[in-house]
Length: 137
Image (cartoon, rainbow, N blue to C red; front, top):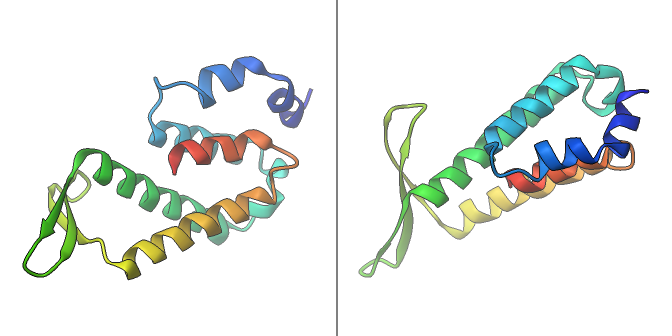
């Protein structure tokens, strides 16, 4: 039985990996990365190293933003009407601030949409990939 059949027929994979709250988004991303490395023939769309690298860089940015929104503070400056997100960046080991401008939000929305669009090409072969990414984004 190939990888595709396992994904398509395995309720255990779905239940233990995709739907669980025990695994973080980052852990799910790492599982996806491991599967893609172990079974590259099943992921033709991402056979190019640069495209795969960009995929995981985009996922890291989305995870970072999600974590910042989940654990940071949204601050509204009433004098300037500027909305910003203050959060701790564990990778840089320091406090960060992002201005949540329309430009920034549009850029992140485009990144998420593009990522999901790229992965939807694989959807007919491995439907669970999009489920992983929906949990990430």
